[in-house]
Length: 68
Image 1: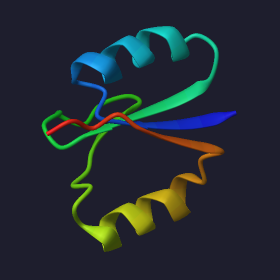
Image 2: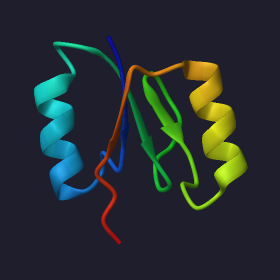
Image 3: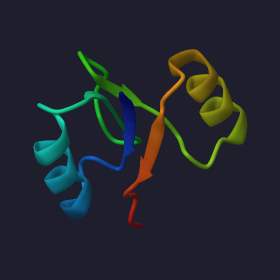
Image 4: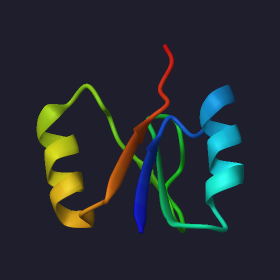
């Protein structure tokens, strides 16, 4: 199962990342990260960017753990 986790660098997102990474095909998004394996930079306020990314990746689940 593909899981897209937004806000993985925050408190809740980091906990979720730790618990999900060994169980699922996890891709992490954050506006502050440097892109590398399984981590992508994405501006969640940009509807077109999010739509394009979701269409490309095709996640089964999208977890929104973004704070402020």
